[in-house]
Every structure is written in structure tokens, then in C-alpha cells.
Image (cartoon, rainbow, N blue to C red; front, side, top):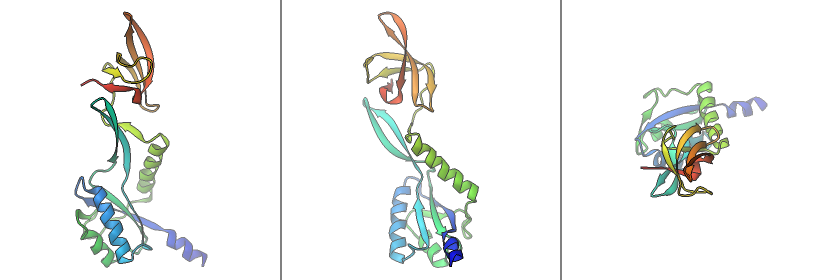
Length: 189
């Protein structure tokens, strides 16, 4: 009995090539199709890796989710249970182009799955926020929050890990080094 439980947990991950920009809709369609077709026990999850990014628009920070793998959706299926019916239902879903491997879907290797899921965990632990347009040393930015609000400064150092910048600000004709986080500054256009 214990062996059956362990065997039921063994899953394979497959990659679907989908119309770029329609990944979220495809996930919704697949979730509905799986529940309608009664494949909830076979398909463990439909996974869309996303990262939170922000961009400064009109002086305001706008937070969005961006697909980590544009044009792809991952699907986790119990090993050996990807039947022809299920494969056809998935392939015939709106905006799905094909499985990776076309007619004979190829499952991802364990190392690839662990790397993908590890990257998602790592991004979640780090706050999961990154800039769409990275900061560059030597670039002039505007401080929008804190005691130096409305001052312009020049980036001297970028620490992507901590999401911090070392910026030189001119105050009363003197250059003053200031450490700021990404949320306190915006790029000058």
C-alpha cells in the first residue's frame, strides 16, 4: 500500500508552447478544461512562472507580474498518466501551439524542474521584485522619497542583490554620498 502512495506522487513536468502574451489565459482555460474533463487527479498543476517587476510611469511606481518564460506554460502530470485524450484536450485548448516535443511530449528532467522551481523560490525569498529597466552606474536619477526628495543624483554603485544604490547628490555645492533603495528613486527620461 505504501508503494502505491509513493508511486502516485511521482510526476512529470511537460512544457507547452503557447501564443506569447496569452499565457495567463491559457492557464485559465487549462484549469477549466482539466476540471471539466475530470483530470484533476491526474494533472497536479498548471504552472506559469512569474516575477514581480516595477516600472516608473508618470512619476509613480507601477508593480506588475511578468512571465519568466514568455510563450511557455508548464504542466505537472502524474507519471505515465498523460493519456491520448488528455494530450488532445490540452493541445486543442485555445492559444496552445504544441507540447515541447510536438507529437511525443518530452518531460523535463528532474534537474531542470528543480532549477526552475528553485529560481521561483529564490525570487520569492528576495522579495520577488526586480526592475524592468536596470540601473546603470553613471546614470542620473531623481530621488522621489526620503529626506533628499526631488534631488537628482548620479549612481556610483548598484547592488542588485540588496536592491540598493549608492548615489552622489549635490547639496549646497558639495557632493554627498547617499544609499537608497530602488523604491526611493526613478529614472530620468
